[in-house]
Image 1 (tube, rainbow, N blue to C red):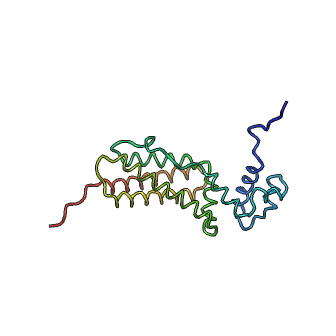
Image 2: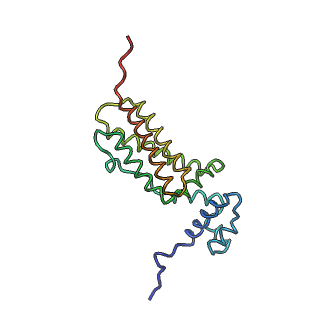
Length: 201
């Protein structure tokens, strides 16, 4: 009878990544040698380099561990209510990111000095902008200026990304941050959907 690995046993590669994530978060990327990662993962140092030829490859792989940020507009849109739709989108993005706050903060911190990480996070940011735009357009009942929609999408995506980049564990902090985000969403949605002022005479 052939023995199979239990589903709960992490693969060697995943153990290495988990160890790297923990140690990078504590000491930083530059201050963490691969020998410490190998020791924490319980593998020979050579296996770290087998899976990740260069140390920065660990950071690139950690980006892939972030939760999928793609949200279907149909699942969050409230027809005719842009603010409610955006709040539901933000709540869904937060729920997906909540289990990875530490990883998200770590990667945003290292993005300043590692181009591959910065590029990957910028691509994720672009997808958030696209999602915000799609939700605004799906929720709105009338025609909105393209420039205004683009500006609103960029502003909200920046707010969400900033919040995820500096987030820490802590329920009280999450609640306070969520309340602030609700006000920001209401402000952006209100400015976007407000009737244009009549021209001055």
